[in-house]
Length: 150
Image (cartoon, rainbow, N blue to C red; front, side, top):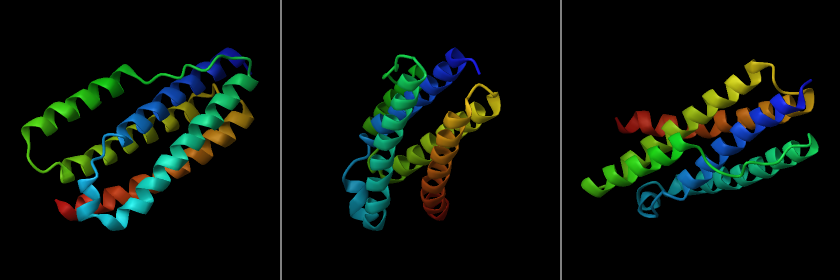
């Protein structure tokens, strides 16, 4: 297995995880006024993201790579778009939930592509597959809620 490909793929996932963490920081507290029952799930997603980040950095380092602890350009553009959109609308609650679902779906797609690429060693495949299941779980919770709001 080529460590360079593994490290590059893991760094891509690290960037996506950083996007996820930065996106979570955009969730406004007033969302929890309307959906207090989701606060614990949300807090768990934030904790899981931090653990995912640490696990990815560990794998990258173990493979002799250097962690690219940044976010993606697409993620930065999306967060800017959210800020602009929210500045023109009143209640951000529903759009915030839409953005959580959008971000989780994008992360799931990236993780699936990484697993299908064949660029991960067996240890990395195991960790990434586990993280993908966590992403799918959080996605389903917020997706169900978003669909009930539409």
